[in-house]
Image (cartoon, rainbow, N blue to C red; front, side):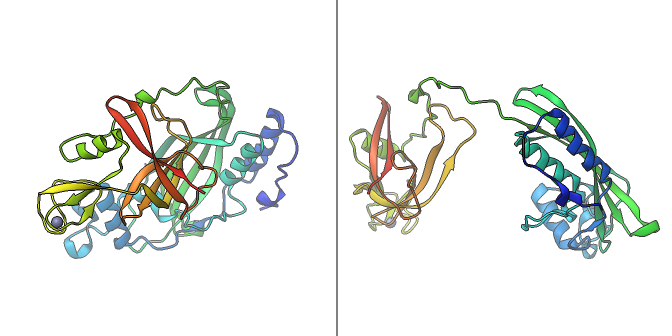
Length: 322
Ligand code: ZN
C-alpha cells in the first residue's frame, strides 16, 4: 500500500474538484488486505445474538441441542466488528473517505442503504476475515438534510486465505456524507403548553397537586414510614397500600446528567439538560435543569423551581445553585 491514509493532506480549502481528486486516491488503494475477525465463529456469540434478535431457528442452537453448527447469515458483520479501540487500518478507504469529507465540511453522516448477500453458511470454528473497497462516490446532491455525497463501500467476508480463500458474504454499504443545513436564525418562541404531558393518575396526583402549590412531595408509606419515588400503589418494603407524602426540602445534588440535542421535543428548548437528582431525603428523581447548564457537573448542588405551564400542569425543575 503506497502511503495509505498517512499520505492524506486534509489542510486548506476544499471544492468539488479537490474532493474528487482525493477520493480518486481512495479508489486507487483498491481492496484492503484481509483483516481477521477477533474470534472464530463461536456458539456463545451466536447464542447472544439469536437471543437479542429473537431468532429461534433450531439450526442455530448449539450442537448439543441439535443445532446444525452454523451461524445465522445476518451475523456476517458481527464477527469482524471493530472493538472499542478507535484506531483503524491505514489502508481502510472508507475511513479515509470519511476524513476527506469531514475536512471539506461534509461532517454529518446518515446511513442510507445496506445490501447483504450470503454466499454460503459459515460454520462454528471457521475464522472469517473481511476486506473493504470503495465502490462509488456520487455527488454533490441536494437532499432533505443538506447537500452531500453518497459514499458506497463493498465489504467481503472470506474464509481461508490466499488462492484457497472463499467469499462467504458481501455487503454493499452506502452512507450520505452531508453538510448539515444551517440553523434557522430566529427560532420562533417555544410554546411550552405543547409539552408532552406527564402521566397523572391516582398514584401520582398528590405529586402534581404539590407542584401546583410550590411543594415537592415524596410518597411515604403510612405503615412503615419508608419514602419512595417514583410513586406506586404499594410499599416495596412492607407491601402496605396505605400511603401519604412528605414535603421535601427541594435541595439535592446532581447524581448524573445528559444534554439532549436531538430529536426535537415539543415545547422544549434544545439543548435540554436532564439530570438524575439525589434529594437530601436520599431518593433520586429525574428532572430538567434550567439555570447553570453551562457549569453543571456531577455533584452540583441544585434547588427545585416550579414552572407553571397552564392550569393543569406545573413542572418541578432544577437550578444549579452556587
Ligand atoms: Zn411500608
